[in-house]
Length: 131
Image 1 (spheres, rainbow, N blue to C red):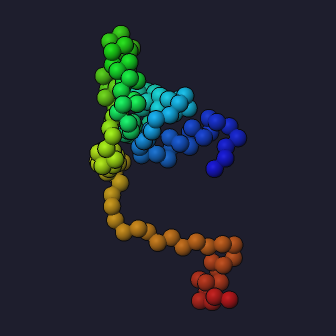
Image 2 (image 1 turned 90 degrees about the vertical axis):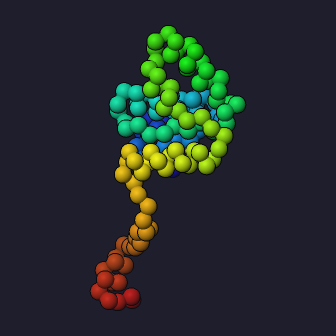
Image 3 (image 1 turned 180 degrees about the horizontal axis):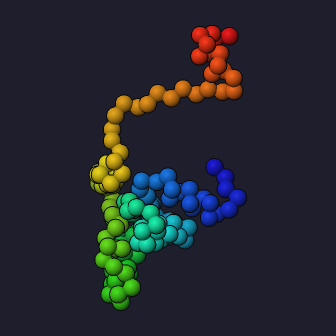
């Protein structure tokens, strides 16, 4: 998808998500991580996992959050503990799965079969015809 306005892209990113997995990145990645953290912190969106992949890369950021911001009282412990820092894909998937199944009521089941109808084709096929 291409968005004309960046804020619309960010809204769509959060609106249809059950979790975020962040790989090492730059300012844009940090922006999206902290935008999501603020929305969770302020109760604008329901909590969902924010997984940070690559412990070596993300540890300095989390250390700063804990040792500086948390110590100064500008963050709650829940704001920092909401991040899962891991190198394990299996751990990330298990964490996302447990939250998504528990918090959002998602469940495994047979995949729904969705017919795709285009223009007037639906009427023809529903009427028993194919022509």
